[in-house]
Amino acid sequence: MAAATASTSTGVILATGSFGDAILNMGTAPLAAAVMVHTGATVIDSLPQGNYFHVSADSMKMTIKQRMGVIPYEAIVGGTMAIVATLIYGFIL
Image 1 (cartoon, rainbow, N blue to C red):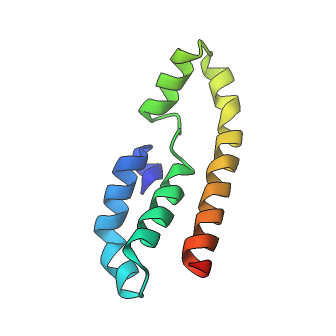
Image 2 (cartoon, helix red, strand yellow):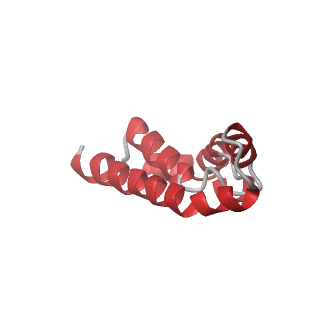
């Protein structure tokens, strides 16, 4: 959902509206569900069609080419967050 909007907050709102009941009905604690959905949306938070992409490029005086080069690193950081959150809140806690 976040990929379609390139927004963490909008993606989380759409995901919880669509899948929230199903996730909670599986027995997942509300806090754990919120953490996992949010970190999943963060993986693709800074896609080129989103506001954060342009704001962060302008704040660092980066060209679009330079900003595009950072996307793989951001995806790695976001993916790591999502994996760790899923392991901790989905399996350990």
